[in-house]
Length: 350
Image (cartoon, rainbow, N blue to C red; front, side):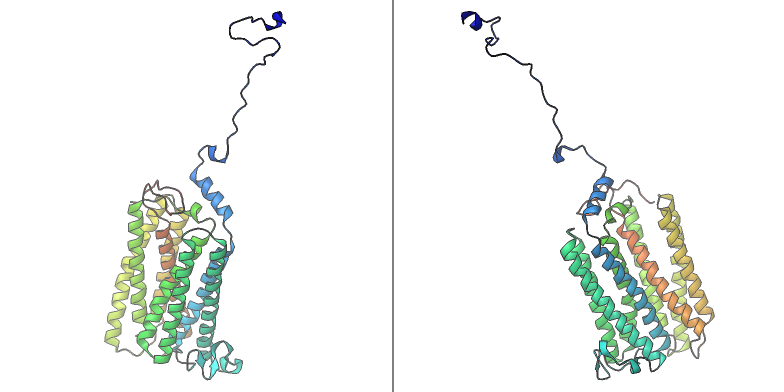
């Protein structure tokens, strides 16, 4: 036993306690110890965790609003805003259950009542979007966007109802001008609710944001001037009408040059598709406006003029929505584009 207890060295264990070489197991990284990943990968993971339903409903709302604008533009073109007496109490019937025989009694009634029914559909889709976003989308800004879209739709519908109850051309003008802003909001809501929104954000800096926002304001002013001209088209004295037309056309030239320049700048900053789409939209919009102007007759609206005019109204809405979408996709340099995260800005449109 003494031999077993003998030490072969001052710091070695007795032989009865055999020693084993000490090995260190490699440390396996946990989720918190993962190396830094590109922001795009993190955004892609966020996209995978977000439900697609709020986006699909928001997109359906925006698409239905395109149809609503077409019917609304046709109502103004035909002068059919008072074709159905009353609002929710439409000629003694609850609006959604307006009788089919009255609905199809003439073209003006069909267009006006179809406009109202599509408006109800848009409202229901917006309500569904709010509910789906509240239940399925945890991003901080999503609920605010969906709720803002619903409030705007309710306000727009109320304007339309008051226009009918008061038989007011002033309310008709406000209703038409606000419709363009509402559509831009709905299209923006669909963009923001997309699961891929953060991966779609461009990396343009603060100068680009200010520039695109300023252009969006200018485009909306032009849209309002178009409504101002359009709602005075038939009953107004020809001298006043020419003044409205000259103001609208004059700003149209400025808008055209600005958007073509901006489209080229966007293409130069790597946003080729966005720049090309913007230039195509503005050129088509100018062509539609010139076509409607060339077919104008003071006595009555012809089929060609009416069709081109309604498409011109829709073109203005699409152009405004595109510009607002570009403004949303820009972010100040060095900052995340959203409180929920996103890629920092690295490029600047100058």
